[in-house]
Image (tube, rainbow, N blue to C red; front, side, top):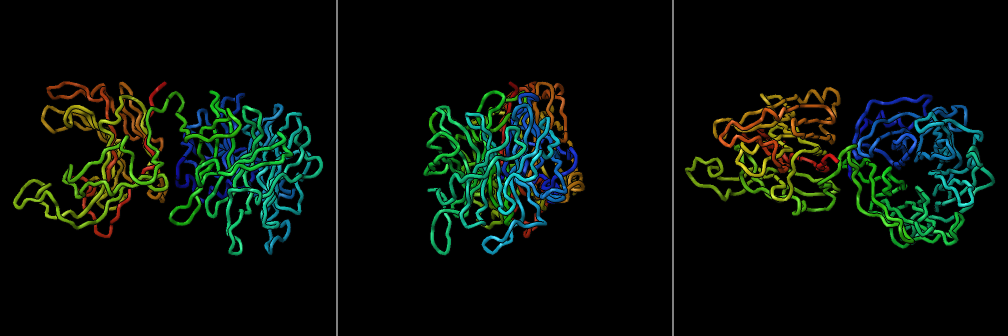
Length: 593
């Protein structure tokens, strides 16, 4: 799914990597799935509580009734600080499994104060997969009988749970590639209550067995050395498979292997090609409460600063045949809603002409920019509208003209504006747009809607987001307007919130993505920013005062996204302020079921 900036500051991320001594919740509610930064997302659909629980690297827990909006993160582990894990172990690739009435927490714990040995010239921190237990999904998850599950002189990780047809429980885990340059996939039998292990581990396959992974080692191309993220499943034809992750050079990649014997001991035969798009990996499978089979997986990409960003994504999955088939992205709907239209901007290049139109030229509000197609481009699943300084002849120029579009000899700025007019419109529902806005001088980005038929303002306008300097103060605006009894003279319901309202709470606000939301019902329009209500408009009072006498907010509207510069509201832009970048992650429209 999407590439998003961190929801939590680095300090919270550090806290999240440590096991704690009590159950605790940290401050966030109703967070969209793709606004959460999380590696190795594992989702338990718990029918007892009718709730989804998600964990992963960092070891903390999120919960959701609908997969769309999440509350958390909760601290749910209570390890023994006197054990090999130490006082504050890092937690990787945590998983939750319900088994025989209890809940088990499989995770890799790393004690950064100890080593398990020197491998290939590197001292490797003591780490191993381990299992904790709780009576309910929220924990606290506590140690069981055995203090050690896997050998203390080896680095192991990414333990997952599997029960064979005869009822024998196993942990499947990875041997770290640092041991000998060739990572392993292994299994070990668990005690009936999962409180420890029986016997020793057994090799299932190695990283070098993969036909699709690639690396350059000592100047030669060969298989990659990494094994990562195992998860076992059976197809509807009863074929046993295992999804796991490695690399194709620098691309995080997920493949699959199948057991020829139908049992965990294999032999395991690898599919020749990866099963997910590039830079997705460490997946697991689960069924929704409605019975839909989904894959939870994280995307893997780097931002401009070189930081790795990992975000949970959901894909639809088909197991009806002999092989796993991974389908399209799955966008969960908020509880009580269904998704009726969206653009995730997943295709590189230009926006879909099935969804969007471009505007061209000088269009409105005496703005500085010339709108054109070139300034709107999709890369890494983000639509970027860029306002650029320019200097070219205005083809509309007429010497002596008083028309603002014709009196300018030159085009000094270009940008883009797109809309769904004639391609998609809706009446009532919920619109969500996740975006990062430019807040420099002269910047005027917007998410807005207009009615299809009548001229403005009789057609009604809803501004889900505008940003500009209102009376010199950088501000976020949430507005609606309709017609007065004078032509082209609207009645406005506008709420202006100073940008400082947000940046005082988060100094880095402007560097992050945020979710703007509009809830549009028969009697009201409510506009939110990151779940904070900015404006509520009573649309029982928005009938046009013009001769048409209609209420425009009882008719369908289409969507517009644009980045304007200067003009009536944008203000002056300095030359060193270019380029201005407006990044849009997605636009989604829901209606009630």
